[in-house]
Length: 292
Length: 187
Image 1 (tube, each protein chain N blue to C red):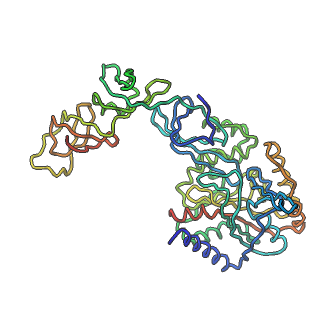
Image 2: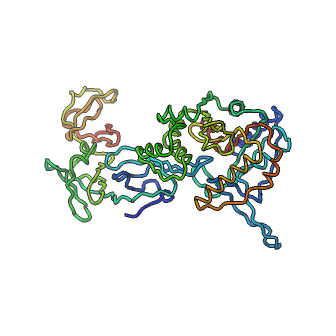
Image 3: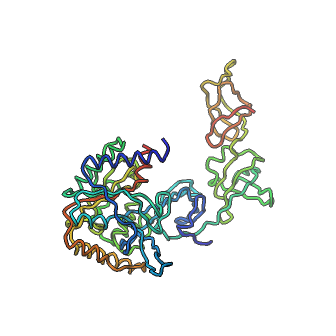
Protein backbone atom coordinates (compact mmCIF):
# COMPACT_ATOMS: atom_id res chain seq x y z
CA UNK A 1 0.00 0.00 0.00
CA UNK A 2 1.27 3.48 -0.77
CA UNK A 3 1.22 6.20 1.88
CA UNK A 4 -1.76 7.76 0.08
CA UNK A 5 -3.70 4.50 0.18
CA UNK A 6 -2.84 3.95 3.83
CA UNK A 7 -4.21 7.37 4.75
CA UNK A 8 -7.35 6.75 2.70
CA UNK A 9 -7.92 3.43 4.49
CA UNK A 10 -7.38 5.12 7.85
CA UNK A 11 -10.01 7.77 7.06
CA UNK A 12 -12.45 5.10 5.85
CA UNK A 13 -12.00 3.08 9.03
CA UNK A 14 -12.47 6.14 11.25
CA UNK A 15 -15.66 7.08 9.41
CA UNK A 16 -16.95 3.51 9.61
CA UNK A 17 -16.35 3.47 13.38
CA UNK A 18 -18.31 6.67 13.94
CA UNK A 19 -21.01 5.94 11.39
CA UNK A 20 -21.74 2.65 13.15
CA UNK A 21 -22.39 4.64 16.33
CA UNK A 22 -24.56 7.22 14.54
CA UNK A 23 -22.27 10.20 14.97
CA UNK A 24 -22.86 12.95 12.44
CA UNK A 25 -19.88 14.01 10.36
CA UNK A 26 -19.72 17.80 10.19
CA UNK A 27 -17.66 20.47 8.48
CA UNK A 28 -17.17 23.80 10.19
CA UNK A 29 -15.52 27.00 8.88
CA UNK A 30 -11.73 27.09 8.96
CA UNK A 31 -11.47 30.82 8.10
CA UNK A 32 -12.48 32.68 11.26
CA UNK A 33 -12.94 36.26 12.37
CA UNK A 34 -11.55 35.65 15.86
CA UNK A 35 -8.21 33.98 16.66
CA UNK A 36 -7.69 31.51 19.46
CA UNK A 37 -6.94 32.97 22.89
CA UNK A 38 -5.01 29.83 23.93
CA UNK A 39 -1.82 31.20 25.51
CA UNK A 40 0.62 28.95 23.67
CA UNK A 41 -1.18 28.41 20.36
CA UNK A 42 -0.86 31.07 17.68
CA UNK A 43 -3.36 31.50 14.86
CA UNK A 44 -2.08 32.10 11.35
CA UNK A 45 -3.27 35.54 10.26
CA UNK A 46 -4.56 36.00 6.72
CA UNK A 47 -5.50 39.24 4.98
CA UNK A 48 -8.53 38.81 2.74
CA UNK A 49 -10.44 40.90 0.19
CA UNK A 50 -7.78 43.56 -0.07
CA UNK A 51 -7.98 43.92 -3.87
CA UNK A 52 -11.70 44.61 -3.81
CA UNK A 53 -11.42 47.24 -1.11
CA UNK A 54 -12.94 45.14 1.66
CA UNK A 55 -9.71 44.39 3.50
CA UNK A 56 -10.22 42.17 6.48
CA UNK A 57 -7.91 40.39 8.87
CA UNK A 58 -8.95 36.80 9.38
CA UNK A 59 -7.50 33.73 11.04
CA UNK A 60 -7.15 30.07 10.08
CA UNK A 61 -8.65 27.82 12.74
CA UNK A 62 -6.17 26.14 15.11
CA UNK A 63 -8.81 23.53 15.98
CA UNK A 64 -12.49 23.16 15.09
CA UNK A 65 -13.41 23.13 18.79
CA UNK A 66 -15.43 26.33 19.21
CA UNK A 67 -17.25 26.00 15.91
CA UNK A 68 -18.23 22.43 16.76
CA UNK A 69 -19.39 23.54 20.20
CA UNK A 70 -21.73 26.03 18.54
CA UNK A 71 -23.31 23.06 16.77
CA UNK A 72 -23.57 21.12 20.03
CA UNK A 73 -25.27 24.10 21.72
CA UNK A 74 -27.76 24.14 18.86
CA UNK A 75 -28.64 20.51 19.51
CA UNK A 76 -26.59 18.70 16.87
CA UNK A 77 -26.10 15.65 19.08
CA UNK A 78 -22.93 13.49 18.75
CA UNK A 79 -20.65 14.89 16.04
CA UNK A 80 -17.21 14.31 14.54
CA UNK A 81 -14.97 16.10 12.10
CA UNK A 82 -11.70 15.33 10.30
CA UNK A 83 -10.05 18.51 9.07
CA UNK A 84 -6.76 20.30 8.49
CA UNK A 85 -5.84 22.83 11.18
CA UNK A 86 -3.20 25.54 11.16
CA UNK A 87 -0.86 26.77 13.87
CA UNK A 88 1.78 29.46 13.60
CA UNK A 89 5.26 29.12 15.11
CA UNK A 90 5.16 25.31 15.27
CA UNK A 91 7.99 23.63 13.43
CA UNK A 92 9.77 20.45 14.49
CA UNK A 93 10.07 16.73 13.98
CA UNK A 94 6.46 16.27 15.07
CA UNK A 95 5.10 19.81 14.83
CA UNK A 96 3.91 21.43 11.65
CA UNK A 97 2.10 24.60 10.62
CA UNK A 98 -0.62 22.42 9.10
CA UNK A 99 -1.79 19.05 10.34
CA UNK A 100 -4.96 16.98 10.47
CA UNK A 101 -7.22 16.74 13.52
CA UNK A 102 -9.94 14.28 14.27
CA UNK A 103 -12.25 15.94 16.77
CA UNK A 104 -15.36 14.36 18.21
CA UNK A 105 -17.96 14.93 20.92
CA UNK A 106 -20.19 12.48 22.76
CA UNK A 107 -23.25 13.72 24.64
CA UNK A 108 -23.61 12.41 28.23
CA UNK A 109 -20.14 10.84 28.19
CA UNK A 110 -17.71 11.52 31.01
CA UNK A 111 -13.98 11.32 30.21
CA UNK A 112 -13.73 7.68 31.30
CA UNK A 113 -16.45 6.62 28.90
CA UNK A 114 -14.81 8.69 26.18
CA UNK A 115 -11.39 7.11 26.87
CA UNK A 116 -13.01 3.66 26.57
CA UNK A 117 -14.60 4.70 23.28
CA UNK A 118 -11.30 6.10 21.98
CA UNK A 119 -9.57 2.91 23.03
CA UNK A 120 -12.13 0.95 20.97
CA UNK A 121 -11.40 3.24 18.01
CA UNK A 122 -7.66 2.56 18.33
CA UNK A 123 -8.24 -1.18 18.34
CA UNK A 124 -10.60 -0.83 15.38
CA UNK A 125 -7.76 0.97 13.56
CA UNK A 126 -5.33 -1.87 14.20
CA UNK A 127 -3.60 -1.12 17.50
CA UNK A 128 -3.28 -4.38 19.37
CA UNK A 129 -1.83 -3.51 22.75
CA UNK A 130 -3.91 -3.14 25.86
CA UNK A 131 -4.76 0.29 27.15
CA UNK A 132 -3.05 1.64 30.26
CA UNK A 133 -4.79 4.34 32.32
CA UNK A 134 -3.01 6.46 34.88
CA UNK A 135 -3.99 9.68 36.62
CA UNK A 136 -1.63 12.65 36.25
CA UNK A 137 -0.81 12.41 39.96
CA UNK A 138 -0.16 8.64 39.72
CA UNK A 139 2.18 9.16 36.76
CA UNK A 140 4.15 11.74 38.73
CA UNK A 141 4.38 9.66 41.89
CA UNK A 142 5.24 6.48 40.01
CA UNK A 143 8.01 7.94 37.86
CA UNK A 144 9.33 10.82 39.98
CA UNK A 145 8.13 10.62 43.59
CA UNK A 146 6.67 14.13 43.25
CA UNK A 147 3.25 14.66 44.85
CA UNK A 148 2.20 16.97 42.03
CA UNK A 149 -1.22 17.98 43.36
CA UNK A 150 0.20 19.01 46.73
CA UNK A 151 3.47 20.69 45.77
CA UNK A 152 3.41 24.47 45.52
CA UNK A 153 5.21 26.63 42.96
CA UNK A 154 8.23 27.38 45.17
CA UNK A 155 8.75 23.72 46.12
CA UNK A 156 8.43 22.67 42.47
CA UNK A 157 11.10 25.23 41.56
CA UNK A 158 13.43 23.69 44.14
CA UNK A 159 12.82 20.26 42.59
CA UNK A 160 13.51 21.65 39.09
CA UNK A 161 16.80 23.10 40.36
CA UNK A 162 17.93 19.73 41.68
CA UNK A 163 17.49 18.42 38.12
CA UNK A 164 19.53 21.34 36.75
CA UNK A 165 16.46 22.72 34.98
CA UNK A 166 15.27 26.28 34.36
CA UNK A 167 12.92 27.81 36.93
CA UNK A 168 12.06 30.87 34.83
CA UNK A 169 8.32 30.33 34.79
CA UNK A 170 5.46 32.76 35.33
CA UNK A 171 2.93 30.18 36.39
CA UNK A 172 2.97 26.85 38.22
CA UNK A 173 1.14 25.07 35.37
CA UNK A 174 4.02 25.78 32.98
CA UNK A 175 6.52 24.32 35.43
CA UNK A 176 4.29 21.27 36.00
CA UNK A 177 4.27 20.68 32.24
CA UNK A 178 8.04 21.21 32.04
CA UNK A 179 8.68 18.59 34.71
CA UNK A 180 6.18 16.25 33.04
CA UNK A 181 8.02 16.58 29.71
CA UNK A 182 11.44 16.08 31.33
CA UNK A 183 10.71 13.41 33.92
CA UNK A 184 7.46 11.59 33.04
CA UNK A 185 7.11 11.57 29.25
CA UNK A 186 10.33 9.61 28.61
CA UNK A 187 8.96 6.86 30.91
CA UNK A 188 5.81 6.59 28.76
CA UNK A 189 7.88 5.49 25.72
CA UNK A 190 7.48 1.84 26.68
CA UNK A 191 3.68 2.02 26.98
CA UNK A 192 2.03 1.58 23.55
CA UNK A 193 -1.34 3.07 24.55
CA UNK A 194 -1.53 5.25 27.66
CA UNK A 195 -4.19 7.62 28.94
CA UNK A 196 -3.18 10.24 31.49
CA UNK A 197 -6.25 11.77 33.16
CA UNK A 198 -7.36 14.17 35.90
CA UNK A 199 -4.98 17.07 35.43
CA UNK A 200 -4.22 19.66 38.14
CA UNK A 201 -6.92 22.36 38.07
CA UNK A 202 -4.33 24.93 36.91
CA UNK A 203 -4.12 23.00 33.62
CA UNK A 204 -7.87 22.78 33.12
CA UNK A 205 -7.95 24.51 29.70
CA UNK A 206 -11.61 24.07 28.73
CA UNK A 207 -12.30 21.10 31.02
CA UNK A 208 -14.67 20.95 33.99
CA UNK A 209 -12.94 21.45 37.34
CA UNK A 210 -13.79 19.54 40.51
CA UNK A 211 -11.71 20.53 43.53
CA UNK A 212 -7.99 20.14 42.71
CA UNK A 213 -8.73 18.20 39.55
CA UNK A 214 -9.67 19.13 35.99
CA UNK A 215 -11.55 16.38 34.16
CA UNK A 216 -9.19 16.30 31.25
CA UNK A 217 -7.13 13.52 29.64
CA UNK A 218 -4.35 13.09 27.15
CA UNK A 219 -3.60 10.09 24.95
CA UNK A 220 0.04 9.04 24.63
CA UNK A 221 1.12 6.44 22.06
CA UNK A 222 4.61 5.16 22.92
CA UNK A 223 5.39 8.42 24.71
CA UNK A 224 4.11 10.69 21.95
CA UNK A 225 1.23 13.00 22.81
CA UNK A 226 -1.52 12.28 20.32
CA UNK A 227 -4.80 13.49 21.80
CA UNK A 228 -6.37 15.82 24.33
CA UNK A 229 -9.88 15.43 25.75
CA UNK A 230 -12.18 17.25 28.16
CA UNK A 231 -15.33 16.85 30.12
CA UNK A 232 -16.52 20.06 28.49
CA UNK A 233 -17.47 23.32 30.15
CA UNK A 234 -21.09 24.01 29.34
CA UNK A 235 -22.17 27.59 29.81
CA UNK A 236 -21.20 30.88 28.25
CA UNK A 237 -19.93 32.47 31.46
CA UNK A 238 -17.42 29.64 32.16
CA UNK A 239 -15.98 30.07 28.66
CA UNK A 240 -15.87 33.84 29.04
CA UNK A 241 -13.89 33.41 32.27
CA UNK A 242 -11.34 31.09 30.63
CA UNK A 243 -10.89 33.33 27.56
CA UNK A 244 -10.42 36.43 29.72
CA UNK A 245 -7.88 34.58 31.89
CA UNK A 246 -5.96 33.38 28.80
CA UNK A 247 -5.96 36.88 27.37
CA UNK A 248 -4.56 38.28 30.63
CA UNK A 249 -1.76 35.70 30.48
CA UNK A 250 -1.04 36.59 26.85
CA UNK A 251 -0.82 40.24 27.87
CA UNK A 252 1.63 39.39 30.67
CA UNK A 253 3.84 37.53 28.16
CA UNK A 254 3.70 40.48 25.74
CA UNK A 255 1.89 38.32 23.20
CA UNK A 256 -0.97 39.72 21.13
CA UNK A 257 -4.34 39.46 22.87
CA UNK A 258 -7.74 39.59 21.33
CA UNK A 259 -11.37 40.53 21.65
CA UNK A 260 -13.38 37.65 22.99
CA UNK A 261 -15.37 35.65 20.49
CA UNK A 262 -18.71 37.31 21.25
CA UNK A 263 -20.52 35.29 18.63
CA UNK A 264 -19.45 32.06 20.32
CA UNK A 265 -20.35 33.35 23.78
CA UNK A 266 -23.78 34.49 22.55
CA UNK A 267 -24.34 31.10 20.96
CA UNK A 268 -23.65 29.39 24.30
CA UNK A 269 -26.38 31.36 26.08
CA UNK A 270 -28.06 28.03 25.41
CA UNK A 271 -25.45 25.90 27.25
CA UNK A 272 -23.83 22.79 25.82
CA UNK A 273 -25.42 19.52 26.84
CA UNK A 274 -23.22 17.55 29.27
CA UNK A 275 -20.60 16.03 26.95
CA UNK A 276 -16.97 15.09 26.52
CA UNK A 277 -14.84 15.72 23.46
CA UNK A 278 -11.38 14.89 22.22
CA UNK A 279 -8.98 16.01 19.49
CA UNK A 280 -6.56 13.52 17.92
CA UNK A 281 -3.58 14.38 15.74
CA UNK A 282 -4.02 12.12 12.73
CA UNK A 283 -0.43 12.23 11.42
CA UNK A 284 0.98 11.33 14.83
CA UNK A 285 -1.56 8.54 15.19
CA UNK A 286 -0.75 7.23 11.71
CA UNK A 287 2.99 7.26 12.40
CA UNK A 288 2.46 5.13 15.51
CA UNK A 289 0.23 2.72 13.56
CA UNK A 290 2.96 2.13 11.00
CA UNK A 291 5.70 1.56 13.55
CA UNK A 292 3.63 -0.88 15.63
CA UNK B 1 32.52 31.86 23.40
CA UNK B 2 29.18 32.88 21.94
CA UNK B 3 25.88 31.76 23.38
CA UNK B 4 23.55 29.60 21.36
CA UNK B 5 19.78 29.53 21.84
CA UNK B 6 17.65 26.40 21.48
CA UNK B 7 16.54 27.44 17.98
CA UNK B 8 20.20 27.25 16.87
CA UNK B 9 20.85 23.84 18.43
CA UNK B 10 22.15 21.32 15.89
CA UNK B 11 23.37 17.77 16.20
CA UNK B 12 27.11 17.73 16.82
CA UNK B 13 27.16 21.25 18.29
CA UNK B 14 29.60 21.58 21.23
CA UNK B 15 28.18 23.41 24.24
CA UNK B 16 29.01 23.93 27.90
CA UNK B 17 26.64 22.11 30.24
CA UNK B 18 27.15 22.32 34.01
CA UNK B 19 30.82 23.17 33.49
CA UNK B 20 31.61 20.32 31.10
CA UNK B 21 31.95 20.46 27.31
CA UNK B 22 29.19 18.39 25.71
CA UNK B 23 28.14 17.50 22.20
CA UNK B 24 24.47 17.50 21.06
CA UNK B 25 23.41 13.99 20.01
CA UNK B 26 19.73 14.72 19.46
CA UNK B 27 17.48 17.76 19.82
CA UNK B 28 13.74 17.04 20.07
CA UNK B 29 11.12 19.80 20.13
CA UNK B 30 8.25 18.90 22.47
CA UNK B 31 5.20 21.13 22.39
CA UNK B 32 2.46 20.02 24.78
CA UNK B 33 -0.96 20.59 23.20
CA UNK B 34 -1.75 23.09 25.91
CA UNK B 35 1.67 24.43 26.82
CA UNK B 36 4.77 26.19 25.67
CA UNK B 37 7.45 24.56 23.54
CA UNK B 38 10.41 22.77 25.10
CA UNK B 39 13.56 21.21 23.69
CA UNK B 40 14.48 17.79 25.03
CA UNK B 41 18.18 17.47 24.21
CA UNK B 42 20.41 14.42 24.42
CA UNK B 43 24.05 15.32 25.09
CA UNK B 44 27.28 13.39 25.23
CA UNK B 45 29.70 14.64 27.88
CA UNK B 46 33.00 14.95 26.03
CA UNK B 47 35.07 14.37 29.17
CA UNK B 48 33.28 11.46 30.81
CA UNK B 49 31.76 10.06 27.61
CA UNK B 50 28.43 9.66 29.42
CA UNK B 51 25.18 10.64 27.73
CA UNK B 52 22.56 12.74 29.48
CA UNK B 53 19.20 14.26 28.67
CA UNK B 54 18.20 17.77 29.60
CA UNK B 55 15.07 19.74 28.80
CA UNK B 56 15.06 23.46 28.03
CA UNK B 57 12.41 26.10 27.62
CA UNK B 58 12.52 27.11 23.97
CA UNK B 59 14.63 30.27 23.84
CA UNK B 60 17.03 29.29 26.64
CA UNK B 61 20.65 29.46 25.63
CA UNK B 62 23.95 27.76 26.45
CA UNK B 63 27.53 28.87 26.05
CA UNK B 64 29.46 27.34 23.18
CA UNK B 65 32.38 25.10 24.14
CA UNK B 66 35.81 25.85 22.70
CA UNK B 67 36.29 22.32 21.42
CA UNK B 68 38.44 21.27 18.47
CA UNK B 69 39.03 17.87 16.90
CA UNK B 70 42.54 17.39 15.51
CA UNK B 71 44.26 14.49 13.78
CA UNK B 72 47.46 13.78 15.66
CA UNK B 73 50.20 11.22 15.46
CA UNK B 74 50.90 9.10 18.53
CA UNK B 75 54.63 9.27 19.34
CA UNK B 76 55.45 7.49 22.61
CA UNK B 77 54.54 6.99 26.24
CA UNK B 78 57.12 8.38 28.64
CA UNK B 79 55.69 6.62 31.69
CA UNK B 80 53.72 9.60 32.94
CA UNK B 81 51.99 10.84 29.79
CA UNK B 82 51.05 9.86 26.25
CA UNK B 83 52.78 12.08 23.73
CA UNK B 84 51.17 13.17 20.45
CA UNK B 85 52.16 15.51 17.66
CA UNK B 86 50.07 17.71 15.39
CA UNK B 87 51.68 16.83 12.00
CA UNK B 88 50.82 20.23 10.56
CA UNK B 89 52.31 22.43 13.27
CA UNK B 90 54.68 19.84 14.78
CA UNK B 91 53.33 20.99 18.12
CA UNK B 92 53.50 18.24 20.73
CA UNK B 93 50.84 17.44 23.32
CA UNK B 94 51.43 15.36 26.45
CA UNK B 95 48.11 13.74 27.30
CA UNK B 96 47.36 12.64 30.82
CA UNK B 97 46.49 8.99 31.35
CA UNK B 98 43.04 9.98 32.68
CA UNK B 99 41.98 11.30 29.25
CA UNK B 100 42.89 8.06 27.50
CA UNK B 101 40.01 5.76 28.51
CA UNK B 102 39.84 2.70 26.26
CA UNK B 103 42.18 4.28 23.71
CA UNK B 104 45.28 3.22 25.63
CA UNK B 105 44.80 -0.39 24.57
CA UNK B 106 45.06 0.46 20.87
CA UNK B 107 47.86 3.00 20.61
CA UNK B 108 50.58 2.04 18.17
CA UNK B 109 53.47 4.41 17.65
CA UNK B 110 53.15 6.51 14.46
CA UNK B 111 49.37 5.83 14.17
CA UNK B 112 47.10 8.81 13.49
CA UNK B 113 44.45 9.39 16.17
CA UNK B 114 41.69 11.94 16.67
CA UNK B 115 42.36 14.14 19.67
CA UNK B 116 39.67 16.43 21.11
CA UNK B 117 40.99 19.65 22.60
CA UNK B 118 38.94 21.77 24.98
CA UNK B 119 40.42 25.19 25.67
CA UNK B 120 43.59 23.75 24.09
CA UNK B 121 43.72 20.87 26.58
CA UNK B 122 43.36 17.31 25.28
CA UNK B 123 40.25 15.68 26.78
CA UNK B 124 39.84 12.56 24.69
CA UNK B 125 41.65 10.37 22.18
CA UNK B 126 40.04 8.16 19.53
CA UNK B 127 42.37 5.60 17.90
CA UNK B 128 42.02 4.60 14.22
CA UNK B 129 39.15 2.17 13.50
CA UNK B 130 41.65 -0.62 12.84
CA UNK B 131 45.08 -1.15 14.38
CA UNK B 132 47.74 -3.83 13.98
CA UNK B 133 48.71 -5.40 17.33
CA UNK B 134 51.13 -8.17 18.27
CA UNK B 135 49.91 -11.17 20.24
CA UNK B 136 52.11 -11.51 23.32
CA UNK B 137 50.20 -14.21 25.14
CA UNK B 138 47.62 -16.83 24.22
CA UNK B 139 47.07 -20.57 24.54
CA UNK B 140 48.95 -22.65 21.94
CA UNK B 141 47.40 -22.71 18.48
CA UNK B 142 45.58 -25.82 17.26
CA UNK B 143 47.09 -27.29 14.09
CA UNK B 144 44.65 -27.71 11.25
CA UNK B 145 42.03 -25.40 12.69
CA UNK B 146 41.74 -22.71 10.06
CA UNK B 147 37.99 -22.36 10.01
CA UNK B 148 38.06 -20.04 12.96
CA UNK B 149 35.22 -21.68 14.82
CA UNK B 150 35.08 -20.65 18.43
CA UNK B 151 37.97 -18.60 19.71
CA UNK B 152 40.30 -17.92 22.58
CA UNK B 153 41.48 -14.84 24.47
CA UNK B 154 44.79 -13.31 23.41
CA UNK B 155 46.73 -10.56 25.14
CA UNK B 156 48.17 -7.92 22.80
CA UNK B 157 51.38 -5.95 23.17
CA UNK B 158 49.30 -2.96 24.33
CA UNK B 159 47.73 -4.99 27.15
CA UNK B 160 44.26 -5.25 25.64
CA UNK B 161 42.70 -8.74 25.49
CA UNK B 162 40.96 -9.72 22.24
CA UNK B 163 39.07 -12.87 21.32
CA UNK B 164 41.01 -14.46 18.40
CA UNK B 165 40.60 -17.62 16.27
CA UNK B 166 42.22 -20.78 17.64
CA UNK B 167 44.96 -20.86 14.97
CA UNK B 168 46.55 -17.57 16.08
CA UNK B 169 49.80 -17.99 18.00
CA UNK B 170 52.14 -15.81 20.05
CA UNK B 171 54.21 -13.35 18.00
CA UNK B 172 51.65 -12.94 15.22
CA UNK B 173 50.43 -9.49 14.17
CA UNK B 174 46.63 -9.24 14.01
CA UNK B 175 44.21 -6.55 12.90
CA UNK B 176 41.80 -5.37 15.63
CA UNK B 177 38.67 -3.25 15.25
CA UNK B 178 39.04 -0.63 18.00
CA UNK B 179 35.33 0.23 18.08
CA UNK B 180 34.23 -3.28 18.98
CA UNK B 181 37.49 -4.80 20.30
CA UNK B 182 37.09 -7.60 17.75
CA UNK B 183 39.63 -9.56 15.75
CA UNK B 184 39.46 -8.38 12.12
CA UNK B 185 42.04 -10.56 10.36
CA UNK B 186 45.73 -11.41 10.12
CA UNK B 187 48.34 -9.06 8.77
